[in-house]
Amino acid sequence: MRKKIVAGNWKMNKNFAEAEELVGAIADELDEKDLACEVIICPPALYLEMASDYAEESILSIAAQNVSNFDNGAYTGEVSASMLGEMEIAYCIVGHSERRKYFNETDKMLAEKVDRLLDYNMKPIFCIGEQLDERESGNHFDVVKNQMTNGVFHLNKDEFLNIVVAYEPVWAIGTGVVATPDQAQEMHSYIRGLISEKYGDKTADDTTILYGGSCNAQNAVTLFANADVDGGLIGGASLKADDFVKIVTSF
Ligand code: PGA
Image 1 (cartoon, rainbow, N blue to C red):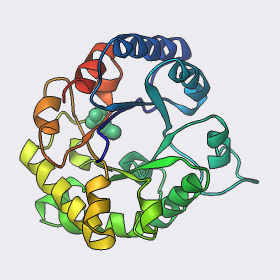
Image 2: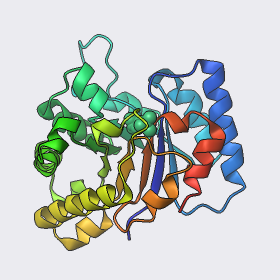
Image 3: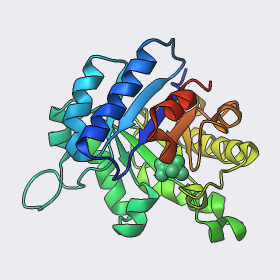
């Protein structure tokens, strides 16, 4: 049976002291609770070591927000999968729409990033999702299908079992406009169908598919109540411990 997951993507926010306070507060609040899901914190790269120290003492898992598509070598400014692996980072976000848009990350680069992470035993949280005009013109299913095909469907079945999918409609990210529970369920079920066609029902059933985009402490319950929504990738609402803990306990 697949895992439920709530992951907090802090993006490029918080100074060191604030980050330490936030991860400490989340760990303290969650350690007293009986949780129905795995909880992942995705801090900026420079705070990964600090966050990992907290994670060792708590139920939290840690994800990086990005990784190089190259293995090692003369790539100034990059962080490699082998470096993340040494820090016992369990997951890494790949293909977030902000990286596709602002850093020109192509499908080919994303597929390479997925491969690098698997080489070092980390699980990619692979983000897909359509832009507003693509939904309005009825192309959203094709967009998502292409992103899955180009980013992760080169993997064999055993490799694919390490993938967490995050459906994040771009029009919902940071806008306050959340997908309706029906829109989320419809797309998640479509994605699970794609996985089933490629790898079979069992693999599709075992794959965690998260929803992301303006998910918050108020709407998480109705989103997570859908059969194919296995949790969330949370941006803005993961920056306040109380809101994030409320989302984590929304199952
Ligand atoms: P948001 O971001 O929750 O602030 O909309 C989600 C994400 O980008 O992962």
